Image 1 (cartoon, helix red, strand yellow):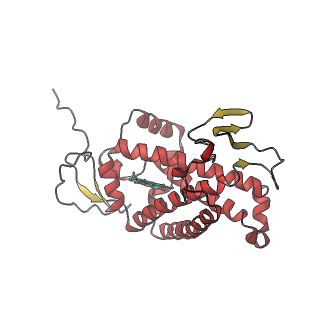
Image 2 (cartoon, helix red, strand yellow):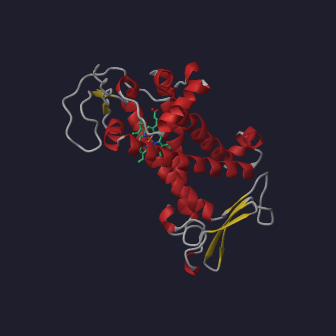
Image 3 (cartoon, helix red, strand yellow):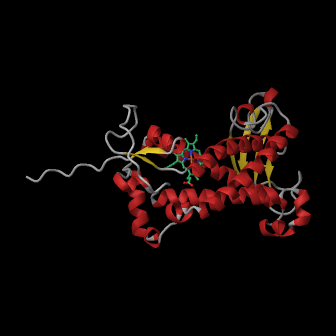
Length: 286
Ligand code: HEM
C-alpha cells in the first residue's frame, strides 16, 4: 500500500462507495499488476488442473500409487451416477462430480475445466505454460515487495497483532461485519494479513514446489523434493489439497470484498484509488 495520501477530487455517487471521506492512493502498481495477472493465472491453472485430474481421478499417499493401490480420495462414475469418496465417506455427487449422464462420465464437468472437452494433452500445455507465469510472477512480486517495503509495512504481523486478545477482537469485528474506518481502513487487519501471507508464503509456494516434485525431469536435479513431500503421489495429493485451499481462500476473499464495499475495494485494486470510510461522528454532549 502506498503511504502518501494525496487528496483526490470528490466522489461520484456510485453504489457501494462510502459517503464523504477522502480519496487516497492505496495499492501500489506492482501489487495491482501482480494481483490481476495472478487472478487470470490461478483461474487457468485451476481449470486445466481439474482436467489433468480427470485423467486419473484418484489420490494416494506414498511413493508409487497405481490402480490397485488404495486411493484416499476418488471421484467415481457408475453408469452416469457420480460418487465422491474420501476415505470411508461416500457422497452422491451426480450432476456435479463424476457423472453428468452416461455420455459425460467425468470427474469434473466441462464447465469447470480447460479445455472443456476431454484432452489431457491440451490441459498439460495450458497448465505448464501458466506455471511459469505463476512461479516467476510470485518470485518477482515477493522480491519486489521486499525491496519496496510492502512486506515489512503492510503484511508483516506485529507482536501485538499475534496476541490472542487482538486476534479475538478482530474475529469478533469480522463476525459482526464491523469494518474499520479512518486511517485504520488503510491498513490490513490481522486476519487479512494472515490470509494474504498464507497465500503468498504458504499455498502458492506449496503448489509450485509440489508441482516441481511431480516433474520427472526435475526429480534427477532436485531429488530432495521427493523426500521432502514423501514421494510423487503424496506430492500430488498435497498439490490438490493446496489448490482446494486456494479455492476456499478465494470464496472467503470475494465474500469479504463484497461485504466491505465492492466498488471501493475493487477500484483500489484496479486504479489504486480508495475512498477512506469516514470515522463515525461522536455523539454530541448533552
Ligand atoms: C475476481 C477475483 C478477485 C477480486 C475481485 C479480488 C479483490 C481484491 C482486493 C479488492 C484486494 C485488496 C483488499 C484490501 O485492500 O483490503 C485484494 C488483495 C489480495 N488478493 Fe485478491 N481478488 C480476487 C482474486 C484473488 C485471487 C484468485 C487471489 C490468489 C490466489 C487473490 C489474492 C490476493 C492477495 C494475496 C491480496 C493481498 C495483496 C497484497 O497486498 O500483497 N485475490 N484482492
